[in-house]
Length: 138
Image (cartoon, rainbow, N blue to C red; front, side, top):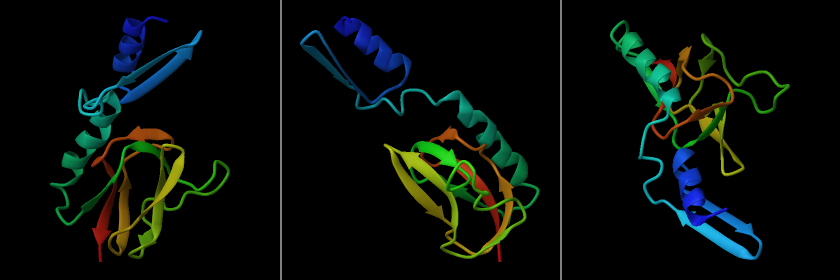
């Protein structure tokens, strides 16, 4: 694989870093602004869902992703989701998990209230600041 092919691969998949070793030759590409280069297409749905919901009830608060990663509604594939729409949650209660760099990060409620809407499908990639839930605070 040539250096140009490695750079093209990193750009095509919007990777911040890519390292390939082949035949004793190592090529490493580091792109400092990779995540901000272009918003991924999966952001369109949650972003459009938020404005549609917010005017109807301005009391709703968006709970946003604190990091880039993969969103999981349950602690394991065969487990029940942490929360569902309509559930009442307490401050500090785990709402979901975001996997980032092979680490599972529990995302907790920042306030008590009722889950009005789940905005992301299970196992979907999420971006920093992307709304995950709409919460009706108590």
